[in-house]
Image 1 (cartoon, helix red, strand yellow):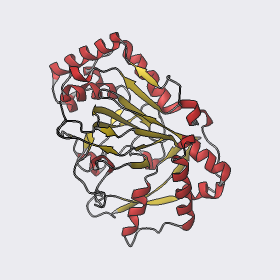
Image 2 (cartoon, one colour; image 1 turned 135 degrees about the vertical axis):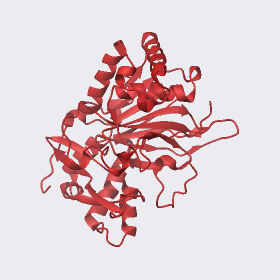
Image 3 (cartoon, rainbow, N blue to C red; image 1 turned 120 degrees about the horizontal axis):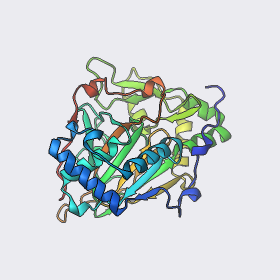
Image 4 (cartoon, rainbow, N blue to C red; image 1 turned 90 degrees about the vertical axis):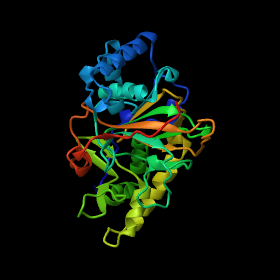
Length: 341
């Protein structure tokens, strides 16, 4: 895009707009928790396999309307929410996953997250080495993760267990970063509208190239769509036939990283066991602070992840269409790593 434009200013926020505000924290009421508990037991009468549970199998009353408002705010408003109040101690890991799945079904349809077809994934230390070219962020333990986006409309995280220390979730308003980049350095913003190379992390379709191309910024029907995972862009350069990162793109990414890490554009969310976070993956980048686990005490950071396609977003760029029909979506599985009960 030769002349990038400021987009969706209604969704542009900065830290001073967020810190001290409480309207992005949705604390469930006693009645809503009862609804969830009843919906859980109803779903369990059908199956203990959440892949067989639809929204109709998880009936909600008043909470249904609250979740509908949350979905609208995620797409057309602030772009993130923290849902609090589920008493983690009252439920097993499997029951927590079913509660999370049921809530998620009211916000969108699940997308597979990797080549294994995980529609419910684990975010915990899986023993992967960060230098492993097939490793992905949800598999890495302890280290901080940079600001990035995932591969769906909405991404959700539910906390099963906190680490002994650290591990706060960080969020950054990508709309504000984009708009300020347009205002300050339109040449760099324009470069990010061009396709950038991404490493497939070894999860490409058999016989296809080990990299793909996608722009960081896309304007579509006057909406802004953002996809940014700088480590994957840099990793693409290990493939000789991948397009080279231009000097202007490198300068743009450096400026984006500086902006994302500037407190002006971000805030932090400490997820306690039972808390759930949902974000608009096109408007909000997320990151993680480093953390320390203590397996002896069971203080091991463990989150469950959903990728969802929202029905509120009626139109998307072609490169953000559902991946359900891809080789990732040929099978639907659930990641079931152990977590402290």
